[in-house]
Structure formats: C-alpha cells, structure tokens
Image (cartoon, rainbow, N blue to C red; front, side, top):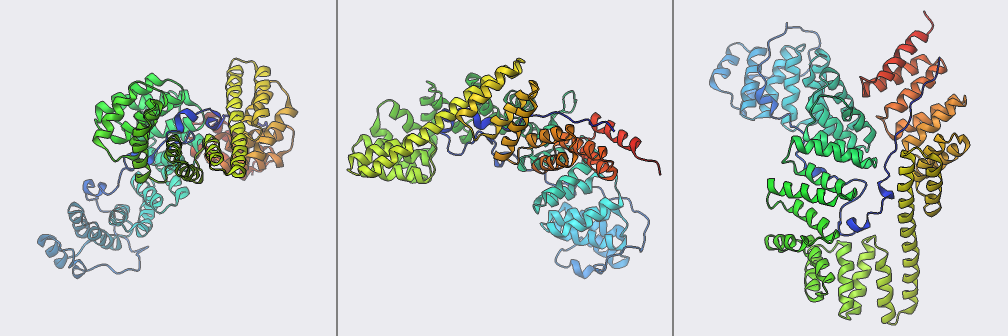
Length: 592
C-alpha cells in the first residue's frame, strides 16, 4: 500500500533565546517551564460527588461473582452510629437497597469510611450492580483508602461500560498513586464516552504537562474550530505547552482566551504576563498584571512577579510598587533583594547592603542575592566578606559569569594571585560560551524569519552560522534540517537530523523525520526504530503513531499496523488522516 507520512512540528527553542535580563533576578524561573502548578486550584475532587449522587435504582440480583468478604452486619456499624430508622430496617430485613440508603446517609454526614462499609455490604448482596460498586469505590477514595478503591471502581467500569463516572474516579485514583500511564488511559476512555468532560480534559492535560508531552496537550486541547470553551486549567496547560515548544504567539493567544473567559484567574494572568515578557511586549504584560491585582489586591506572588519585570525593564514604576510591597511584607527576602538592585543602581550602597544582609539571612540559598551582597561588600572594601558571598553564589549555581570576574578582582586585592587567575580564566570561558549562545540565538531568530518568508537557502546559512557559535545545541541542528528539507538537500538534512538525535535522543520530531527519510528510502526496519523512538520520547505524538502504522502496513504487518493506528485514534479520535489510514489498512488486508 502507498506510504503516507506526516510532517513535523518543532519542539522547545526557548533556551536559544537571550533571556538573562529577565531571569537573572528571578530565582526560580525557567524559560522552559514558567508554570507553577501549586498556584492553581487542585484537580476537581470526587469527594463531593458522593454528596450529590442519588441512590441508584436496583439491578437484578445475581449470585455470580460474589466477593469472598462477608456482608457486614449492623454490629459492624457500631462505631459509625446509623440513624434509628435505618438501623431498625437493617435489623428487620437487611437488603442491598437499605445498605445503599445507609451509605448515602453517611456520605451526607461526610463519614466516608462508614459510607464505604455500607456500600460494600450493598455490593456484596448485589455484586452485578455497577452503581453499588461505583459508590463503594468512590467512598473508599473519599475516605483516603485510595488503593482499596481501585478494584470496585474497575468492577463498576466493567459492569457498565457506558458510564463515565467510574472511569473519572479511576483516573483520579491512579493519578493519586502515581500510575500516570494507567490514569491517562482511563481519562481517554472517559473522553471516548463524553468528549467534553471537563474533569477528564483537565486531568489528562495536566498529566501530559507533567510528562513534558507538550505535543499531546496541543493535540488534546488545541484543535482549531472547536466550539468548546476551555476551563481555566485547560487554557493554562495549552499555553504552557505552546510556550515550551517556543510557539509563544500561540501561547499568548491561548492564555489570553482563557483569561478573557476567567478574568480573575491569577495563574492565567501570571503565565500570560511571562509569555508577553518573552515576546518583548512589556506594556501588555504590565497591563495584564495590573488587571490581576485589581481582581486580587495585595496578592504577594503576583506583586513580586510584577516587581521582577519592572526592575528588569528599568521601569519608573518599580520603586513605588516595591515600596508598597516592603511596607506590607518587610521580611520578604525577594522584595528586599529587588529593592537592593534599585538602590545599587542609584549608588545607595548603604541601604542596598542593609537590605541584602536581611535578604540573605532570610534565604541563604538565593544565589543572586549572595552575589549582589558580595558586590556591595566589595564597595565597602570588605574583601573577605565579599569573597565569602561570591563563593557561596558560585556554590549555589548562580548563572552569571560576572561572579567569577568579581571574585577574581577580590582575590587579586587579597594577594591570592594564582586563584584570581583561575577565576579569570573561568570567567572568560563562561562569558564566551554565553556570548556564543546569545549570538547563535540572534542568528536562529533571523533564520526563523527567513524560513517563514520562504527563503530556505538564507535560513540554512543562518542556522549554520548559529551552529558555528553553538555547535552542541540540538534544536539548531533540527532547525537546519528543516531548512535543508525545503532546499531538497537530502544528504544535508539527514546529517543535521543525525546530529540533533546524537545530541538529544529524546527529540521526538527529529526521530520522526529520520523515520520518514528511512521509509522513503525503502529501509522500513530503520523507519520503525525511529518512529518507536519518537513515540517513546512523546507518547501522544499522533504523527509518529500514524507514520509507524503506515510503515508497518507497507510491510504487511497488519496486526501491528492496526494497533498503531488505533493508538493514534485513541489520542485523537477525530483525526481524519488516521481514519483514512485505518480504512486503507482494513481494505488492504487479505480476505480470510
């Protein structure tokens, strides 16, 4: 059959950007992952579902499949204290329906352990009741007995495959016990029943973010033309995914749409502001944070993020905001450090020293504050103190090469010439590497513009020049391969892809494209290996699954090809190319 393989999308290029001006004053920020998950509301808890579930209608009683545990008697509920009416009913004639009534009553009292015991008894009497199995498992989960909840929830899903609730509960249980792959399967099964399930979309997109499977998030949430309004968490995860693939304009659009829908969402506002800052759209970033603080006056995390941006941008609005923050939080280490940056710029080293000493006392692991204090102490000729804090900053991993130069000057003044020369050499090496990365980033950005304008020859030349400055950056080699693909330089493209994979075997797009080239040259075995590597690096990479299915079908490996295309459709059920390939594989198989 004809082999049809899909194209590529680029992964993370953010580390090629020159971002030192922003991130040198942001201790925990990373251009690869700006999101702080703990800031967002937790995943919707299924604990509260129990309080709103109506008692199920009873299914026909059956003996098959009864579990070995005995049905609990009224005495077993002594510690749970059932209400008199239900206690009397159980003494008179215990039934599954009465135990279910008791479970619902305990659930309304938030006595979930007692509810689990009651639903367990109901399920033992009617083991083929999907509802009782579900409520039993849900109660166990709500009572904190997560592991025990899995079995009855699986039974409920098996007994009623059309009910989405057991799958949602199972996904939550499996996420809780860190069985993420199994949880993702249940979230996808839930979406097969209810494609618009907010709970499943929230949880699955979060799992994919945690797996660094950004392509998977975009496949799940980023389809154009869909009428579904994303939840705040979905918008946030989609924005994070685009940002981590260096698709910053698309990230800002997704985050802006989410913020327009939920204007008071602080996580969305912070993430959007960071993306806008990376795009050098400073005034827009500031406007987003201004609006966020109107919704949440005095929110410290948002104010600190705003202060970092204003200080890094040398804005005149930085001093009044920092003054306000310090009045409300005089012992905040980050605010004290940022204030010292402004004071040092103004030549007020006395106050800068005071604020830095307090900042370091409060947070001794802040490398940038240790470096700043070293510089201020050097101004006061406290050379031993400066040396101590420079060395601490280096031990803590401060990214600024200047710390080695500053330490070298202090060591020279202290008469430690040999150590000073060593630090100076380190500075020169690190400074050159940083300058090379910055130069390469600039050339790569111009290359991106040339490639987007259709000038692949110019783009390839720029990417080669960037690689001359930064030869060990895998994404530059991958970008070069894209440009060479446009110029039909097959040998050059293959060499660039091989170099990218050598530097980063988990670069899924490079593995996928090498698979395509291998398949096109007739080497199906090599193609399979590359596609498998792409899938291993990015399990939700639909293009790689489709390409693998097509390759397997070209070898008449029908069962494996069907499994691969089924996996692609499980990830993206509406994918037209996967649907067409599924039909083609079915038609091409020899008739039995």
